[in-house]
Image (cartoon, rainbow, N blue to C red):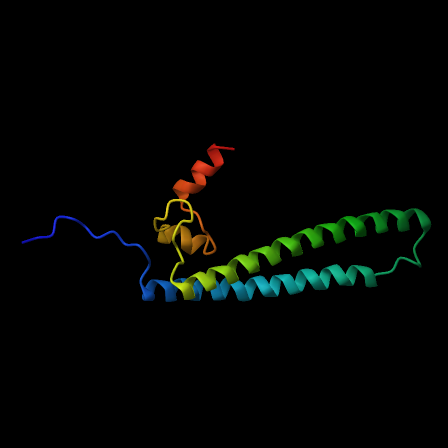
Length: 133
């Protein structure tokens, strides 16, 4: 006799989790390198002094340095959050809770997790969240 009720998956298999772990580790390595570059760019701005520059150019140069510094600082903060989100995803893999939507409790699609491996919301939950704002 055939079983008519299909078993609903409540979590991803260990093989799936290993695939996601590999993706996350690759993204994490790249994100850390990017953060290092941003940090180097941020600190090297301080080293490029304008003491030998004419006053009017010096004011413009320092103004653009401040903007560049602020932008690099914002980008670095965003990159640190991304790294933290990826690290949290690794913890969820270890706990075997990775890929479960925190709103619906359903599995997040593999396609979404492959493109946004730190996702904690399914597309359905994300759309509901966006429309309620």
